[in-house]
Image (cartoon, rainbow, N blue to C red; front, top):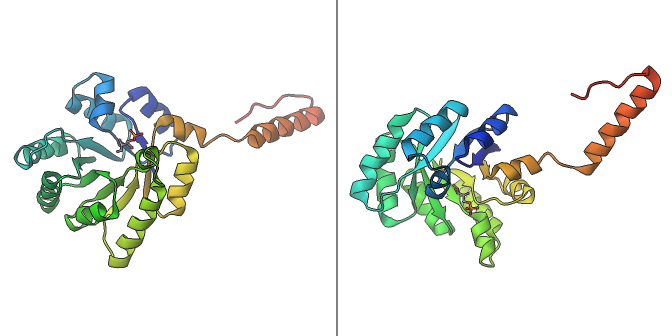
Length: 220
Ligand code: E4P
C-alpha cells in the first residue's frame, strides 16, 4: 500500500518526507486555501519536497474550462496528477485528459457506480471518501471493498486511493480492503507509529542494557 499525505502544509510534508515512507501527496482547494499561496506556486513547492505523485485539483467546474486548467497544472511538474471532481463535466474532462496522457485523480467519489464511471473514463486514481460517508451514517469502508472487487472483476487499471481517512484504523481497514493507496492527514500518519507497549518495551530494553554495561546507550 502506498502512503500519501493529505495536506498542502509544507512543514508537515517535510516532516513526513523525512521518515522516508511518503509516496505522494493529495491536495484539494480547501487544503490549498488554508496555506494562503496561489495553487500553482504551492503545488510547485510541494513537488520539491515529496518525490511522488502530487494531486492538484482543478477549480473550474465546466468541461471547457477544466481542460486548459488541467493541462496547465500537469505542466507544473512531471509528478502532477490532475484532480477532477466526479461530475459529468469532470468525467468528460477525465476522459479527454487521460487520452492526452495526463494522469487524472477523480475525486469526491461516494458510490461504486461513480467509481465505474471514473474507471471507464481512464482515471489513474479514484478517490472514494471514507470519512465523509461515516459522517452521514454509512460505513465508508464498504465502498472501498466494493470498488476493489469491481475493478478486480474487470481488470480496470484505475488505482483505488482511499481518501478522507481519519484514523489509523481507517488506514488498516483500507489496506485490508485492498486499496492501492491511502491518503491521510499528517496527524494520522504520525499516530500510526504509536503503541504504549513499544514505548514500554524500549524503556525496559535500555534499562536492562544500562544495568550491565553501566552506561545509557543512545536510543536510535
Ligand atoms: C482527498 O483527496 C481529500 O483531500 C481528503 O481525503 C478529504 O478528507 P476530509 O473528508 O477529511 O476533508
